[in-house]
Amino acid sequence: MKVKKYNDLLNEKDFLTYSEKLNTFEWRNKRNFIVHRDNFICTNCKSEPTKFEYGKPVRQKTEKEIQEYKDSLGKLWFASVKEEYKEEYDPENPPWFLQKEIRIPLHEEENPVILHVHHKYYILNNLPWEYPNEALITLCHKCHQDLHSENEINVFRDSTKTTKAKILICERCNGSGYLPEFHYYQNGVCFGCNGEKYQELK
Image (tube, rainbow, N blue to C red; front, side, top):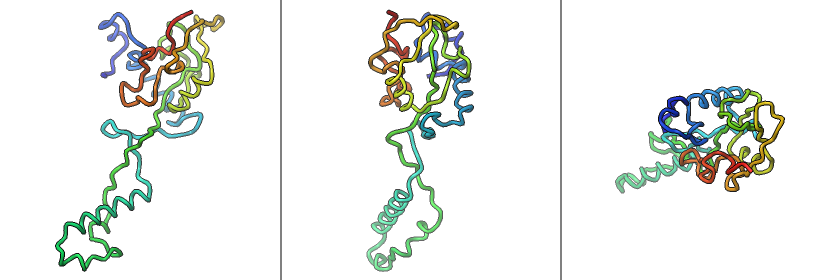
């Protein structure tokens, strides 16, 4: 989805979902500032985000995986040479192309770490970026989900934060607006509440 300015989106649609508001220049700028301030790590578990290449989560291979990759190249080479040369093959002295530096492909990560910016509280009718910086922290998606599952996030009626709004939290995402198992589709937005975090005011 193309990132647009909030006012440009309003000119196109009468109503914007929370996930659409998170896809604006205004939120991207705010989010990037907070993540940069927090040194690009989860402030709770200190995990770093997974790298993505061509839309796929990837990581560096372990030493064991690198050796397995090189061994597989050696087996492919061995299978391709003529029979009379196979007797000359010495596993301790592999082919020249396995002795030099070769590009080791990245390993696809099954459980990627994705950084979120968490609102410590919400104010009804506030846009996601209309909060002071101290009200926002960087969390990995797992810590973000756990925090919403284990804690009640206050929702206030206005910026004075004197009156709490009574709301019905989305049961599907526990009020996080996000489902980590669907991170690969529309950034994992919860379709139970369209990323709004709650279903209705009581």
